[in-house]
Image (cartoon, rainbow, N blue to C red; front, top):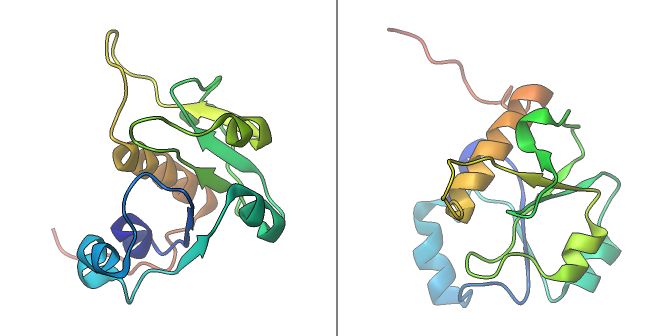
Length: 140
């Protein structure tokens, strides 16, 4: 939630998700970013797909076939991440237009899901000039 709030992108949470999302847990996780974050919750993957607008679904996965740095991102792309412990379900893999991977050092299993999402989202925003709303920093 903090990542999306800070970078000005929406967040869709699709149940069942890999962490508790009751009101108390949500407030604790969101800290002071809850008011800045645009969060939509969906009861299921099917519900999410029914509400999905145009654009590609790009899944970040250790089973990815395309390096995230080799993708030409589009403004209406949606980045998907799975659970920290189990990844995304097979039906999410099947629905994805592309499965992206963050390449790692030999022997490394996986990155924290938020770290991987931040890397890919940063590249997507860089390519699509998505950070244009952020003020330029001045000084040295």
